[in-house]
Image (cartoon, rainbow, N blue to C red):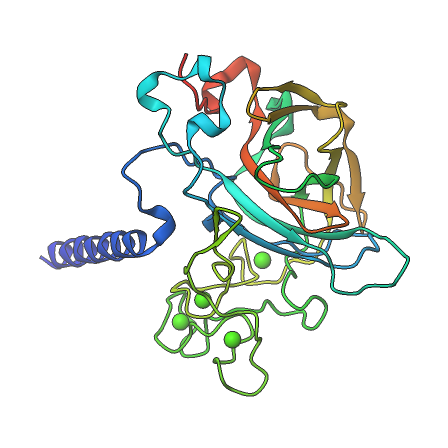
Length: 333
Ligand SMILES: [Ca+2]
Ligand SMILES: [Ca+2]
Ligand SMILES: [Ca+2]
Ligand SMILES: [Ca+2]
C-alpha cells in the first residue's frame, strides 16, 4: 500500500516535471519551430556556460553572447545538390556566438582577446575511440565580418571557476539562497552574484531576457545568457559534486578558422569543415595529475580575436569511424 502511494506520488512528480519542462520549452522563443532538427549537445546553448579562464594564458577577457539562431535554413548552409527540395527551408540547429574584444584599449597596440564556453559532459569523451575531431563553422562573409579567429578546444578536467574567477574557492550558485535543495525556489533566481536586480552590488550584466534584436538582418539575443530570472538554477559546480573543481588537466587543440591547415572541405555556402587529427594535442596541467584520455569530462571551446565578430558553430563531433552510430549525420544521403 505504502509502495503504491510512493509510486503514485513519484508518477505525479514526474508528470509535474514533464509539464514544467514543456512549459519552459514553449516559453523559450528560440525553441519554437515547426521544423525538427537534431540538436547535438554542442550546438544546444542550454548545455553551455561561460568558460573559465584557460590555464596559463595572458590575454584580456572579451565577451561572448551565444544563442541558437532561428534564421538559418539548410539552404543557407548546405550545398543545394545535397538537399531535397522539401528540406531546403528546414531550420538548422546551430550555435551563433557574438565575440566582442576586451574593452581595454591601448592606442597603437593590437592584441587578442579571448572568450569562450564550457560544459560538463553527460558522457565523458574517450579519446581512444575518437579518430578525429570534426568541426563545422559557417564562414559566410554576408553573415559576419571576416576577422581572423583562432579556435581552441580543451577536453579534460577544467577549472569550474568561470564567474568572478579567483574571488572564492566555493562554487558561486543560486541554490541555497532560500533552501539548498537542488530546486529553484522562488527567490533564488537572482543570478550567480546572489544579488537581486536593483540591490547594491548586483551584477549589471546578469539579467536574462529572451528578447531578440535584429542586427544586419539577423536575429540576436543579447541578454539570453543572463542568469538572473532565467528560470534556471545556475551554478559554477558544473559536475554537481558539491565542490568548485579547480584542477586543470586537459588536452588542448588549436587551429585558425581562416587557415587551410585542418580544413577538410568548404562548400558553396561557406561551410567550413575542419578535421583535426586527435594526436596533435598538447597537454595542459597545473599539477601532477595527467589527463585521463579515456575519461575526459569537461569541454571548453574558446576563441582568440582582435575585433568584434561572430562564430557560427554548425556541428562538433568526436568521430569514431568504426562506430559511426556514435556520431550524428545531419544530412541524409
Ligand atoms: Ca533551492
Ligand atoms: Ca543578480
Ligand atoms: Ca538563474
Ligand atoms: Ca564541481
